[in-house]
Amino acid sequence: MTPTLDVVHALYRDFLERGIRHFFPEHRLELIGEGEPQPMLQFHHQTDGSLEMDWCGGRYFFAAPARALSEHELRLLGAIGDVLAARYRSIVFGGSAASALHLFRGLPEDRFVSAFLDHRPYLDQAAIPADSDAIAGAIEVLRESSLLTYENRRISTGVLLLGPAPDPAHPRPDPPPEALPYNSDLIGVKSFHRLCDGIKTVFLVNRAGQLLDLIDIHDWSRGTGRCALAAPTAALYHCHSVATYDGGHFCLVLSPNGEIKIFADGVQAFNFLGGRWRLTDMAQKYRAFDKSVGYPVVAERVFRSALNMSESRRGGLFVILDDPRASAALVSPGDMLTHGPELPPEPPYSKDNVHYLLCGKTVLDLEPSVLESVARMDGATVMDRAGNLLAVGAILRNETHELPQAVAEGGRTTAAMSASRFGNVLKISEDGSVTYYRDGAAAWEI
Image (cartoon, rainbow, N blue to C red; front, side):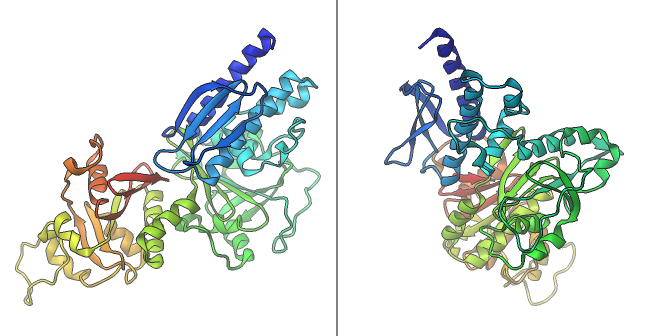
């Protein structure tokens, strides 16, 4: 191996490490030895659910904290390797520099997301993808738009990228002769940002990256018909999920909160929040939560309410106890929903004087908007597995000395970890994240 190739291999090992740590900051990644020198990411699955990988002369160990790697995590690792391998081939094995220049446009993590969503350009391991990347180009438009304001308001926008599969409900329109490429050149047109809001209306773009039309996402999703989504979604983006259920379409949205969301296969696949991309893995995370709760209708209602609250950037805490008798150890008697005295109390009133409004009710008795309003109260909303409300606005007792590790975060996180010793807990943060706690520790975050 020549000294030049040694330098290139060291550089591309660093690219791989940076890419993996961007998407998996909590995972364990270690260089454990030497591997095959070729630029092709090779997996060696371990019996404990971890992974060893060979890449550019290095062998790596990679593992998720306290669980096996998911199918989508493995798919994202493969996407990172495919993009880097294509870039390596374009440099080392030659060819026209102009034809390979598109591989290096934009941020590398955007390209990794694109390869996860559509791996077809990288199936030929011996060739260099020839076409420009419409998905990465659309992400770049949303990224740059997120830095702008229009009339002192943050910009929200969106795009539906047509998939390769036939879609009987939505005939594929032919691009008009004057069709523009959907790329960052459009951002300089001020009225461009007024054409769609990403919530009700989105741009329609084909896989060649041409801007075809402006559509109402609700009308488009109605054409899809009834479908069983793999996981609930926030009410604001239900139609965006449905629109991607068939046909291999992708929907990208820059939300009014400045968050980029990507929907594929009927669920949210990625979001860009807090300066980095997050693999949502929504279907698997929801399955784990649903299985632990044991009552699908209750799990679905609480999960969807948590997502709705995260979109409105309102914090909250849902506690679903395995055994309702555990409420005695977690909630003070004054916070419990119990029937009050037979005669109306005299003023001044306190919080427990209005408990009769919710006493004896379940989360299924309440409209979703009412449940979300209740959950926005300071404190926790506590229920049993069947959804019977036990307490609202409850200040939980925290036994931090019984937690597996010291808690160095805020009060809501401490309360969530402590309460999860007795059941399932969803914590909604005001920054838009939703975290699931079980057995005293965080199991996942969206």
